[in-house]
Length: 314
Image (cartoon, rainbow, N blue to C red; front, top):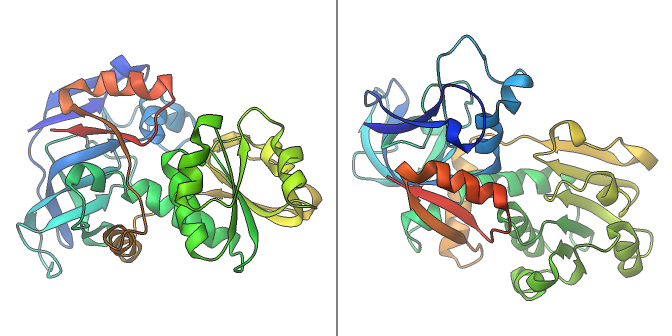
């Protein structure tokens, strides 16, 4: 089958198309025929070798690394003991193991049953593929903050894939959302449920404190503003850094700081699917490209300014 891997870390051109054996599902696993695979910033970090430098990849011990976390597709085969899914089921899944030779940039992928859920019925596979990584990150971020209804949460990068989901999920939990994004995105994020808006470029701490005396109760920092976003939090509040790596700010003023790490979770994936079908969660696709144009997709990702995810289609 066709797949895309990384053999030498570097820029987008480090993505190599290869022919690989179709993977065989083991006990408790399913093989998914990939219909769509979203392109995420963590894919660029993997490709560039940042995760190898951080010790998350066994660089030198493996000849190649798979790329891609998100998948939407159709169950093609099941391993021993699998009863929840059968061939022909439409599913979504998350490949949260980094140190493996194949990812979701492929014609097929094998995942543990615990990483798979039924796909939403109201959207196509391309839109469904944008849900697992970003949706689970949003859920985990809000769980770490654990704010009560009526509390105020600042969401930076609110027009992005993770930020947009956080805004919608937070508003549904009764949180008062202050959204930070580009000036042109105000209508979008208010439509997702934001009560207040701070345009990118302003000092976010001052701007938020002008709206919320004393500062927000918590922040989900999807834009990786770091210390700037921390300044918007009240003393003793909460801060969740998304994809921050070494740029997680110190816990000043008694603020509880978390660096969110996502994990595959079939129950939470099913929850996200149900929210999409209920019209409570908005999937957004910036553009689709064929699998063989993964290099172009990574160039577009690096250019930024995307509203929604790029999606590869085998």
